[in-house]
Length: 138
Ligand code: ADP
Ligand code: MG
Image (cartoon, rainbow, N blue to C red):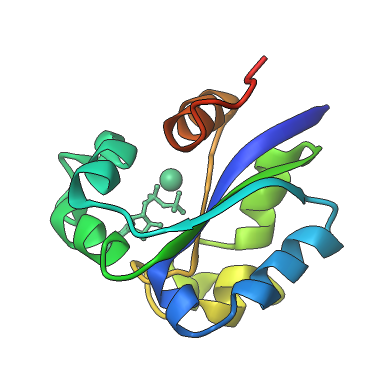
């Protein structure tokens, strides 16, 4: 099924200057960018985005990290885009990410793991609407 998913190239990856390499991973696996915006998240925007993790012990650290520098927010479109992007990203902990994945190539730790990707159709709908409210979500 043709789907859309939300991806974020996180501040660690932007600092490493691997935006181009990460977009190459997406394009070479048939995940086509249909919207892209580079921006610096405010703490409030980062907290709203990660609201599901509000009670987790790493919430404060995660939202500080996500506001530590600019990010690139993308909507990717492709067949089974949500699941396929999760596979392409690799495990949350970069040290455990499978070879060939974006996190294996560019992640540093369990927190500084280069990319975000929606984990279900419901989250993709929320996350795309969060950053691209003008987008047609039907
Ligand atoms: P994923 O991004 O793989 O979906 P989660 O949704 O579980 O992972 O967590 C969201 C983000 O929070 C992770 O990508 C990572 O940046 C950070 N994170 C997750 N677990 C930890 C942890 N134990 N310690 C610090 N940061 C974490
Ligand atoms: Mg997640």
